[in-house]
Length: 96
Image 1 (tube, helix red, strand yellow):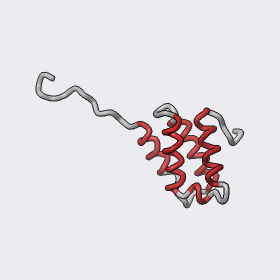
Image 2: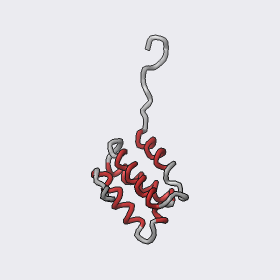
Image 3: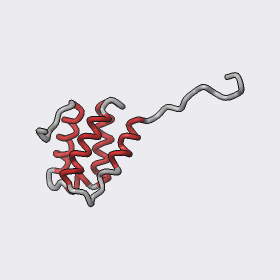
């Protein structure tokens, strides 16, 4: 610190950034199939940004807030949990 400024860089919340990117693609006007795949892909990509329980909690909240869980129907919570657990393991539940 020569000129009075600090060399400290503010931490970047990569998980929050990933969630913000995914949130933009969970619009209820989009087909449910596309939205659940987007949630899975986002969680899979974000799994390195935080502990798995944190990623699971945050993406579950995102699915609930976006209406995806509701739109999946009666087993929506189970479907979201299943897809997110597979994402955290790096597996593809869609068989692609």
